[in-house]
Image (cartoon, rainbow, N blue to C red):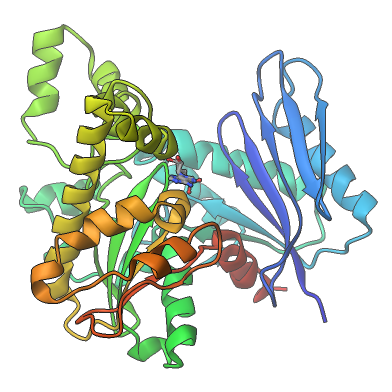
Length: 393
Ligand code: AMP
């Protein structure tokens, strides 16, 4: 029997929504509301393969968006059993998904001090959706929860300890729902219990992170206090010398917020290539000889390979290295270049399998003789959110 869940991901000016069958992960409906608070607010959705778009009233906010979404859902005839909300930051309090009540909502708002753009919009989404679906259980599923198993040696920064004790300054990790999905899928592929499965999972999309998972438990990850540390991303810089934000502030005469924008929105693949944050565009232009595009791809893969190599010591029982996310699932070039750094360790990518695994197909991409196994697994974060929410239905 189908167990359908409304999955919502509320941003400050957008709402991603879907109806997911918690048993199969299938999306009967998926859509996006964009430009909330602007003149061109609009909604686009796909239902049974058919795409529909329409404008919302000028300056429409979250309430109008949720009303439009609940009307679309009502028209499908689906009777959802729960609403799952993606919430970015769950701090140390939320080690798993939580049924919304006043205390949970207050904590989500409280953690906005660490993820201001995300958590406030997430909380607004919860409150608005509760009005649209007052009789359903609303469940917060946190990006950070999966990483609450990390040991102190992985999450404490080498800063004065009172900053951790008094201000919660530590590494939290993000993309937890995707890495959890990769763990579960790899366990199924290998026919092993999840708690005996060990994976290095590389989620490479606009945001990028690697997770080290030893016997079903996250033991390290590349993102830290906010989703900025670690890998090179579309527009985010990843690891930097910690003196740089202060130096740049002085040199460029910018405010702390402007430097934060520079590191989050103008750096990464876009900053290096001076061309685009889109990996597809960079691959096309690199092929034609664009030096910036070539360098951006080279740095992206080298940084990623260094993280994977580092996590080989964190994951002694490694079963597989897994690529996922828009880049991880589709770019055979990024996978081949990254894993090329492991050739001297006996890792061999099968070029045909690597090409065949693109565009949602997935599968193993290493040769039978390879010393480590590498998979491509298409992620499904919404399914994880739906499955967690359904447990409260
Ligand atoms: P996501 O955030 O997971 O949707 O991933 C977005 C990223 O995936 C963008 O950088 C896209 O350029 C990249 N991407 C999607 N399809 C491809 C492809 N066929 N080849 C290379 N990169 C791709």
